[in-house]
Each structure stands twice: as structure tokens, then as C-alpha cells.
Amino acid sequence: MTLDTASRVAVGAAVLAMIAVRAPHGQRSRAVAVAKSFRGRAEAALLTVAWISFVVPLVWICGGMPDATARAHSWTLLVSGAVLTAASLVLFHRSHADLAANWSITLEIREGHSLVTSGVYRRIRHPMYAALLLFGAGVALMLPDVAAGPSYLAAMVLLTALRLGPEERMMAATFGDAWTRYAAATKRLVPFLW
Ligand code: SAH
Image 1: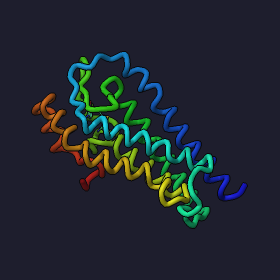
Image 2: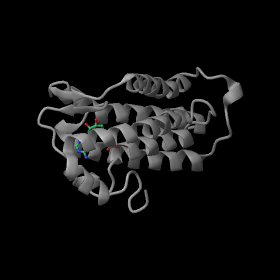
Image 3: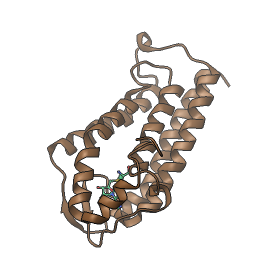
């Protein structure tokens, strides 16, 4: 198999795996009533950007990117990206499993929402965003195009940067002291660091 074909297969598999991990949770969350929504206009814009950036690698797989944006590639970059992406999908799966019915795609508190502080939430407060950032980095390594490669990573950096503050304020307003204690005992994205 050529490096080009292997890269297209790997990026396609990563995107499909991400959809497969998310799908059952998306379906379940539709059945859980929303108690309070904190979804503002910025959230709607962020979700749209995230969706567009998710589709860009698929455009590249189908040969839809201009040659001018192609970059040099190697098996080392592809394999490193594949390993990173696989690890990110494990974390993505674990964070959904730990949040269970408390998960929402946007800033919402569900009926019967409980604060999750165990599993992959034990040391960091945002393992799902950490997984999305790692996934974006993995795709950037696997996909040899300077525009399509880092598009998802760029969207996830934006999402994380703009959402952490509002999300943490929402959790503090909802869970009070329990959130304050949890926040004091954990880091945001990187265990023991930040
Ligand atoms: N920021 C978290 C969760 C992303 S999903 C992460 O990166 O892992 C976003 C939704 O999850 C939020 O709207 C909130 O309803 C819920 N949530 C976030 N942290 C939570 C926690 N520790 N316990 C329960 N629900 C949480």
C-alpha cells in the first residue's frame, strides 16, 4: 500500500471510529430531559465550526484539496498520528462512559445531573476536551495537507479556549461547594500540570 492510500484509509478510519464512539451517547442524551440550558450564541457558532472542521478531512480523503496545500509526509508521521489518534479515542470513549447520562454536546444541565469525579475525571476536569485535542493532533500528523490536516485541531483549540470558562462557571453555579472542592483537587486538561 502506498503512503498516500494508507493515510487516506487511516484518516477515514479515525473519523468513522469517532462517530461510532459518539453515536450511542448522542442517541441516549436525546432521551434525557434538559433541566437548564447555558447554550448561548457563541456555543451555536462553536458547534458549527466544529462540524465543518470535522468534514474537512473527509473532503481531503475524496481528493478535494488543492495540490498547493499538500505538505511533505512520511510513514513515521502517519504511524505517530495513528497511535495518538487511537489513544485519543480510548480517552474519548472512557470520558463518555464516565459521564454517562450527564453528558451533553453543549452547555446543559440535565434532569438528575450528578457531578462525576471518578474514572478519567479523577485527575482532570476536561478529559473529553483533552481527547478531542489529541484526536486533532493525531489527524494533523496523519493528513499531509497544511489546511485540511490541522483544521480539526484548530477548531478544538478554539472550542476548548472559549468553553472552559463558561462551562466551569455553569458547574460551579450548579454544584456549589462540591464543584469547588473537585476543582481544587484536579487540573483542567493535563494531569498534575494545568
Ligand atoms: N468538559 C468535560 C465534559 C464535556 S461534555 C470534558 O471535557 O470531559 C460537556 C457537558 O458535560 C457539560 O455541559 C456538563 O453538562 C457536563 N459535565 C462536564 N463536567 C462534568 C462533571 N465533572 N460531572 C458531570 N457532568 C459534567
